[in-house]
Length: 175
Image (cartoon, rainbow, N blue to C red; front, top):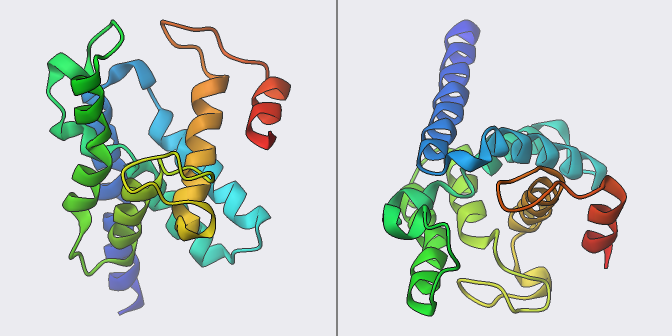
């Protein structure tokens, strides 16, 4: 019975990892971004005092933060120029699309993935989206993933920018 439970959990972990990789096919400028976000999120969770089980749950769920981008048309998602207002409003819907994929799941990892997808663009000051939540009204998992997402985006080179120095990224996040 223990082996069957382990096999089931391993399969669930692999499916989540592969779903994250599938999402990257839509936005291939961020190779391995989702995996790094999961790992950074686990480190932050542990640093905040969350136990190993909960930290692992966050590591597994955080890579799903942008899964809702599969609902964004290529003309918007892959556009090289700055998005116009209508396109930006559509792009912001990826948080709700991601939540919609996971809502109603019985799996704790997938439930957490939905929470993260919905809340990872909320900002402490209330200026984020989709709900304009602020402070502790933003689920902890969303806050952890947001920091991981920003840190990875800053410290990795992209076609439109060079990687930031580690110290500069940390300073921005702390400010």
